[in-house]
Image 1: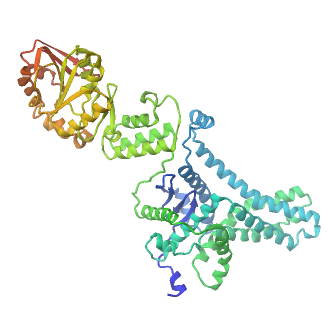
Image 2: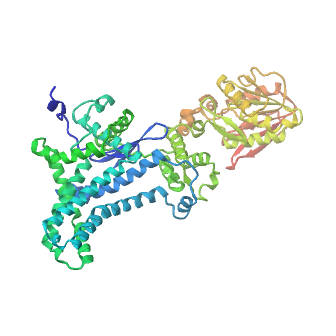
Length: 609
């Protein structure tokens, strides 16, 4: 295969890129996507829509004007992307400094967001200083020393030489920095990826590595073209305006600077059109015109990338293609932390869109950040990158529909840490009321039975809080899986509980002074009306109480006389509106008490025998 056929483009793409810190940004027709490898080696991808205004969209189609629009939008977007990539790769997980906390609390401003704005302003200021002020000062100084130069062609030649020397010196000096060297390797990965796609090859690491790291539409070539056009146009305008005839040196310098600033949009527009035109042709003439930019890419701004850098570039390129192909594809963002209040508000919004209660978002932030849920809105703080990543991981699982406490893996119940998963129900706050009354009722040496124990939360809370009373606690459940988890929870809380796999009393022996039970009490027909996370994730066997929800209470009423000690007590949790019906089932009781839950619903029954 000849070199020409090997380099021939099979596909054309408008996707262009930019190297960032440990990553690459690729911009398509409707989006820009940035891939960065984080400190853990994971490639994070941020997908964002361009969201141009109608006016900007029209301007982007007008020759010469589009060059100006692209230049300024690229400056803003490029600086922002570079700073965001730095946050992903080099996110500082140390405690925020005093100034950062002050910005967050007083102005709700993220230090990195402020740094992005400052960097963009400083970048523009540096460009003006290096390529406008410094060359004009140098030429003005020489014209002062050698008046014959003023107004001659040599004045403009010297201006061009100074600008070119400064440009090359700048590229050479920054190349001494190790971070810049890595940045240029990612720049090479960006070019290779686009070249590979345009050749029609699959975007594998091997194929991309075999392609050239030089590309016609590189920003380096654009800068060089702009520099040359700058010298030609500026020189012509200087001569036509008669700037050299201004006697006052300061005024002459200000006039030069003013002309350069005013003509900058014109120069950018012309340079952009020339670059697009050159990219369409590959003959000897166009190659000669492109050669300075190609040489700059080879010598200064691109380096051969490592395979893992190519993986990042391919991830960014594919993401840009996918976003352009699917207008409905949602945006994704880097996980980099930030100010607590807006981050929490955004998470609540995401949860609301999925029909998830915002309190779950508050619990996630509270647990990860170690802030009591009630205090989340009291004091502003900065969320560190590692904290933000943990929050994001939990939120993704919660947004899938999985209940929050299954995602977290455990929950607090009456001061005990209780592991929970799909084998058992998640303990509810009202069940703590049942545990509390059982703990207060238990007496020295009592034998206590917890029926339908599930996670073992009630039995464990009783055993832990009644250890000084030397009570004997037995817990049973029909589910072997639930018993296994309950045993783990007892071990984690260092309590002594005897567990029995039993269908209510089927394998229970002896009599007990106190029997507690939170049985299934949801009506079978009502299961489908429960919240999605309950009906689809929590075990139905622990929910379904039969046609009217009272099946287990009937069995308890029939069987309990053989297992309750004289003077003993049964404590039950019941569903809303069930208290009166359940009490009717226990006709042989001595007396009964009804306890309301936190919402004022009759929830706990205390039945004495």
